Length: 344
Image 1 (tube, rainbow, N blue to C red):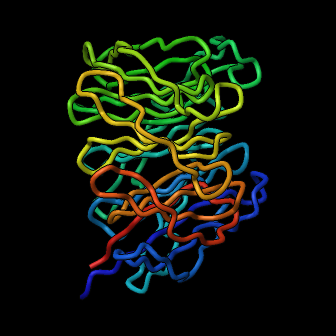
Image 2 (tube, rainbow, N blue to C red):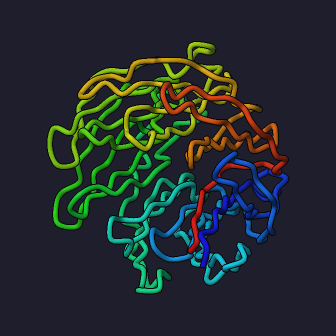
């Protein structure tokens, strides 16, 4: 069977004030980055989507409703999609999910209720059971931004080594380290930073996106599950905190560059990794639309989900400098994420 290159987008549907209908699959040309629509699968606000590392499976959080859910979706050989199972996320507005290194556990972050769930997966990659939520944030913990930090708001669940998970809590400016056989650890970030996402670099440095203060933080792990802040840099040179809300951080394949989407500035900022230090700002490029949310790097192209412009922008990536050049734009209703998939 010849290798098939696909791209699958998620979106917000009317339940979350979006205009999308669910997942959309595209045939992807790895040479020029262009896309050809293949089909769609109706789901309630599948706002974040990931792929299984070895099986033709996707997992989505379905953010709609007071009680969210998680779907496992089969990718058929022709690129069409089929929902296999849907299970409760045991919390409201699930917004992120991630697989552990063995692809046998799926961590789910519930934003609205400030909780994190672990789902056990069987050999076919399907949910086989769940723990009670592994973590519930302290409902009395508040941040300085009353409109966004009225309690714990889990925005990301990040797997680490030796069974460790981190919960990124936008509501209380904290990172929580969780492991079944050890006490919970807490890393305090600057008040009002609103941590949204944590990405681990190859050299042990970690990076945290501050959505509310529009900054990119570099951290060093000082102990199992505990970080210390090395410093930070503005997320955008075009807009400041209060008018810019950075969303998604993506590492280049070689780990030397970081791309950060900026909602408000409507740009993608490029940073160069400084081993053991704070990333260095290099350049900033128009995102190709408005309110750029998620980004996906694949075969020398960066796919940017411009939620409010309702398009998916395809940028060619310069292999030497990392600079972006807009190549294509495709209409997609209320896109929130995109994931590249290879079959065959």
